[in-house]
Image 1 (cartoon, rainbow, N blue to C red):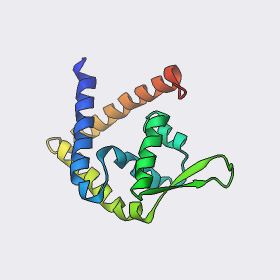
Image 2: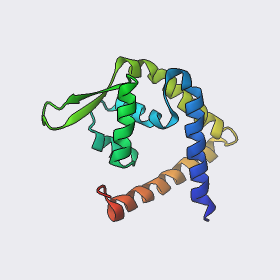
Image 3: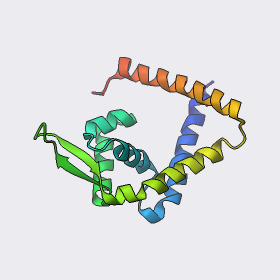
Image 4: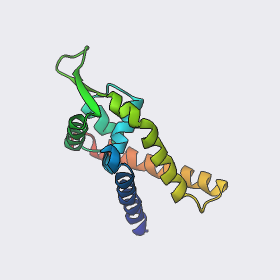
Length: 147
């Protein structure tokens, strides 16, 4: 079953390539899409909260937020609750791009699942949720967030 994680990685890499190609005109890279979607859904997260939500390390989240900030998609603001903490918010540019981001994601999902009927799609989603849940539980239990 070693091919299972390899296939997951192939799908992930192809997804980033497809998004990057489709969103090039917007100035968004494929790997930035999850950041923008999360921040538009939950404005005001800290970089650490973003890292945890997306299962990336803190330095990766910091680099992506910096790129997005330089491109005008997000802004960092000092937290009202804790002046030492910076919160990240989407800009008008990010909010304007949101419909296109969502459409690119929807179209790709439809493309990938085009050969599946409704029952197969539901079964695949249920199994993938189980796999993702096990992966998340392992990271929380065995690795933690300080790694």
